[in-house]
Image 1: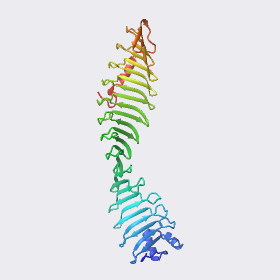
Image 2 (image 1 turned 135 degrees about the vertical axis):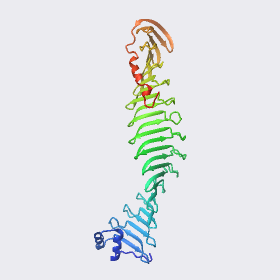
Image 3 (image 1 turned 90 degrees about the horizontal axis):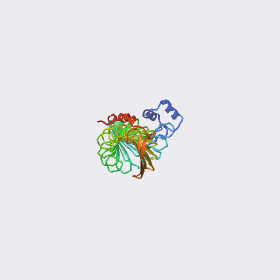
Image 4 (image 1 turned 30 degrees about the vertical axis):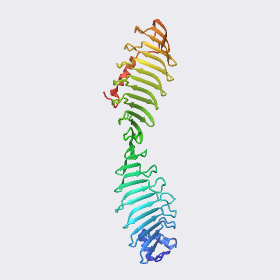
Length: 403
């Protein structure tokens, strides 16, 4: 280069400059110089004797890995760094007025820039771009204030438009908005506290209204609320312990009161309570084994006492028992085969003894006989023992349900 002289061996004067610029210890520099090895730093000058370029070996491996370029006024214009010491620069710093205003860097060994950082006149970062998918241009932009991130925008589907926005508070992520269907409107919202996800809201039908809420503790889902009627209000609630569902509640009528509760054991449905008549009283109970219905109990007249039981095997009804007069004792027994009624026994005198027997084919009675005070089936029992259980599960005791 005309007017530029490369110093392959450094003069005493140049040595002093190098010591000032690179801050090297005298012992280290003298050893390198005395051994006539590759210099720790080299300088390039113009015709007026001003430094136009500086090269440094920062790790002492004998190869230059820092290059600094100066303008005619002696201010830094550009700096290049080889941070992985492969002989090629992968960080580029651009200056204005001697202060860094832009930094570009390549995080991989392909040499392609994938990070862009912009600074204000005070040297504070104001914006950062990242290429997360090898597109050759930023797909994520992060904006900063006073050195802290305040907002990030990301193009996650290579559409050329931001579809994910991250908001920060005091440098920590506070909430995220995502547009999952590309209509330009966010439909998924995630909220954080101290960097931990605490709530997530989804507009699954893309109507502009939230219909699913998730609540988290220590990053794990503990409760889920769902809008099941499309009125913008949660009507179904699911509770979790780890990955397992332990409880489910539902307001199926929209009255603002829970009328269905389901409990689970080891992730399997075990019991369901229902206020089917909106009387603020559990009138139907279902029992399950291995997620299969085995027994149903009903309060048909909503007097607070169960008066009908239905038994199932393999999902098919096999027996019914009923208290028809409200004395808390079974007085009608019905047996089924293959889901069809075949026999009905009745205590017509309500004396605790069978007094009539009917045979069925389909819904048609094909046989009838009087029974002289026969004993009821031994498997049957009165309903009084279950009355206390029913009353203890009255709707007001359920969280979120009030009379």
